[in-house]
Length: 84
Image (cartoon, rainbow, N blue to C red; front, side):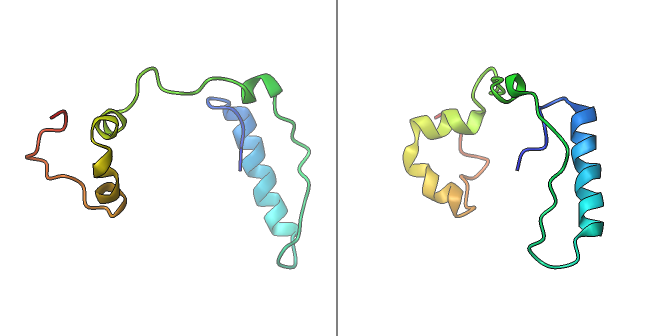
């Protein structure tokens, strides 16, 4: 679900208020309410990637075998150097 462009406080607030109002009107599960909100198409195509990859991404690029441990929520011990 997209609720607007990053940093578009007014658009995100309008989407949230419309959603809450729709929830009050829906009387049965699966009900649908179309909100009168349009998003700026140019904002959708904006590049919102960070300027540099986060440290965990760099670590996993060098240590791909560590991904299963990370997914099991069993990350390396803090005493182990991250960029080793």
